[in-house]
Image (tube, rainbow, N blue to C red; front, side, top):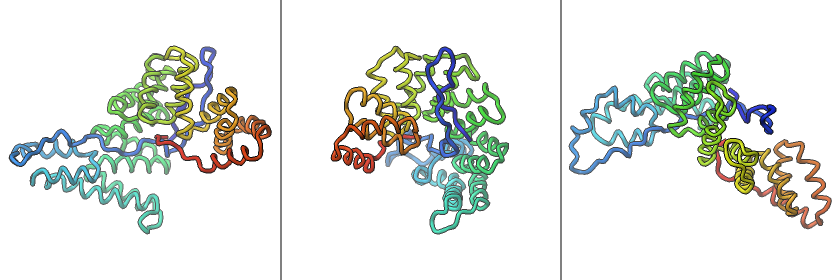
Length: 330
């Protein structure tokens, strides 16, 4: 499944589209309902918790990770018994991931991975539903993938909402429904959904074009560490789309995106450093961009390297070789 990037060029926009990514950029299952709302003390009677109906409890806990399920199961005997199917689903989820990725000493086996995910999904885990949906999409069964995403989304899983929205932007194309699910996931804090919703607002896909709202959602996702959103925030500030033009903030966000590993941002930031006369740092970022496939960076990088002394050129290569990305989400 591919995700959108920046809107394509128009007469009113100075931006160009970035290359789209593959399935690894889809939202992975994530824990959505922290149990910190429970205030348990030694004097809290079990009846306070056991009064919660089993169907409501399992719905709330459907997207719990294994550690959170274990914690919830310790609250009282009733919860322990009610959450047993979801704890069992975590075993199937773990087996599915092992078979999918060839972990824990097993060979990759798509059929066994899918079977494990489906068994976990049958026990009510939205995490297993999302993983089953991802695998269905990867093997080309998009109808079943959407069905899985929808099951998990209806149980409140924000990752499933995000993937369902992205699916409806592609096949089958249902932009209004896509925006609905992306908005729900965005309000739940899913950064990929926030980024995709911003793109919809920027393009006017499924709703009226609104550059201000688009920029706000880009910024929300960028502040959460979403690398593509960082780059788009830099462009918004640079060209005054959605935000008032601010070169300082544009440079700041471009550097953050570059440090997080965005190749286009590395190229742009390298050019900015070159224009400021900081040849060594410019050479490092342009070398990183070149290694990431930005062909436009090659010529400028070579010009810089020719102007540097041999020790300075060696330092540029050393810094590029030892460079590590800052924490981010791609």
